[in-house]
Image 1: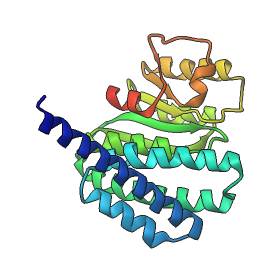
Image 2 (image 1 turned 60 degrees about the vertical axis):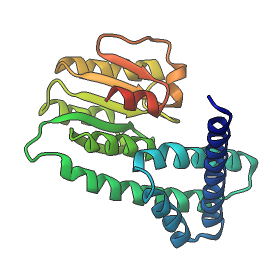
Image 3 (image 1 turned 180 degrees about the horizontal axis):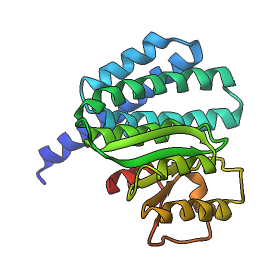
Length: 225
């Protein structure tokens, strides 16, 4: 590359990093002062420049990671975390609602999304719902804390679908490997697939199988959709 091109690229990278740093500062300020308009205005500014998928991956995820560090350091209280999580959830619901119009009426669901019983960390699963609907696929979203036995109501109606679950802290119904085996039994009965993503995937002793696929990050599973 010519010297001028290198200098231009370096400048663009520097501006991009400063923009991310500034936006994350606004997000943290909004969280610490419980300022909903500030957070939503910062998000709207981003959405005016890029699709929501980039906003979530490049801004929300780093912000949530910082929140985790702040939580461990004791610099924020549950009220702060709950406040900002609810705002991110609000934005996700808005974006999912917009994308749902791309799903044609009568489309058979291709994916079923749920969290294990007791698991309430829902933002990652909601982002997957956003991606699935944005691609025009049918989706059944069951949400958080779903008892294992209740999945039978879904398998009675839909065959050959992909069940996706996000494991951050739980399940606690059974030991982890035993829980996944029980899930696989339900999936195999109607020729469906099971995809698992989340922090606890690293604890599983089993590998991918014909009906099971394990993912490390949201980006990995998004590339598979």
